[in-house]
Image (cartoon, rainbow over all chains, first blue to last red; front, top):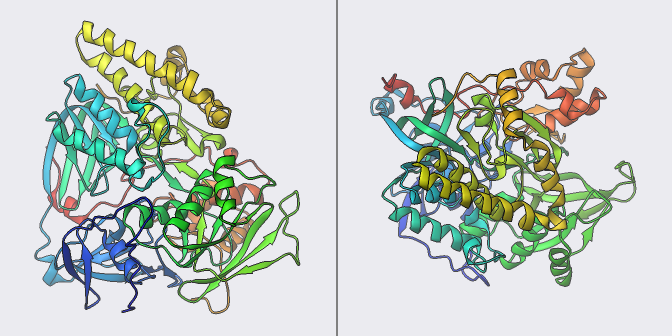
Length: 500
Length: 94
């Protein structure tokens, strides 16, 4: 076992209140961890860089997304293989082992304890998939109108990616202006806990939508079949991946994955970093790395111009971090972890210019090249989707109330096209109010619709009016359709599934 | 490890490399869905959440098409995430 402590004890803006000390076992070694940490983070904090070995080439794999979207951290926990260690909370006495390729089902002795999952059928008014900013606001809004809500979230803590956002939000109090992302997550989680009409299924994930309007949801030991009157899919996004030699080496991490490690869990992702991509995520992560005590060697950008906002770029330049435009990554090297990254300049057609290589001794290469909406559940349900580069990938076509071509199935947040948390919360509110207006009596229905119109007006005419948000706004306009167009699409591409 | 070689991995779940895609295109595969089935791109536990768009971009470039042309037939089938064997042991919920 390596003897490193990557936990952060001093941070300029975050106080990491670690939970009770627990001991679990990793390949025979006792591991000290704190309640509230994931198995993956607890191991990484002590210097475990390799989480698994790949199935065909047995290549080492380390943390990548850290939010349950990829497969790099699959481990065998208490004899059960293929568990996402990034989503598994530490507990006293856990037995954790790494896998070479896909793990095998446990030995017969353990299989005897392998009891069938509990099963439950749930009927509810609104089912929300995803407990991030969009999903939580949607749930609270519906509960406020006395509807019953079930929230399904894969993590063991509510808040989604708010948990790793450390910047202060803009806007008024209603939009949580002045609060940092993780503080908003705390506030929302507190409100949810007080709502008797909201049932939260933590550490669970939706695996499919089925005929008759059923949604299948699984947890470690539980199976739920949920029949809601309306469904809101708020599954967020995953990080995009990039092709360069050795791109799977541990130390090549998604920028968001690194944010989870350092901002949510208070663990240093490495010592010295190169950031690939100068959009807002790349620029912000560079600054947050500095706050976590990581040296940032450079931010590189393949385009001739910096992608993110001037204010963020200026901030990291003040700290002397070069932003190298017209540069791309050539390859990374290392044995079981990145040791060195080589970058190269490109011409206007993005062809590499030999002789312009620069080497950096770094143990971290962060990919901040964009996010892709996680629209798989909506696509599986039969929603008509469109590939929209300006929104990050496939997004469901929707009305302005965010209903998809699957009846009573709504979307909110990054799944509808990549923006950020404030837009996600506003979308969650709109979708939820639209559902409310269909499910409550006439007088309250018109009140909900009025409220929805107000939020819509603010979202489209004020919030998205900023020229900085123009690209996403245009993308969203292009996939927002009228009721008549929706009806036409439903006739043309009938979905086998509907809700309500 | 692959010795001194530095492979470019496209699908991390199933260890599909960029070379695999290039070779498949040279063999004559000109349909992205066929390529996916041939190389099992996105057939692993992450179900293409890491690789699908990257693979599509590379395939589009190799075949001289736009990315939206090559992925228009994309389908998602349940289960969209891995489910524990315990759930299968539990059987059907009536």
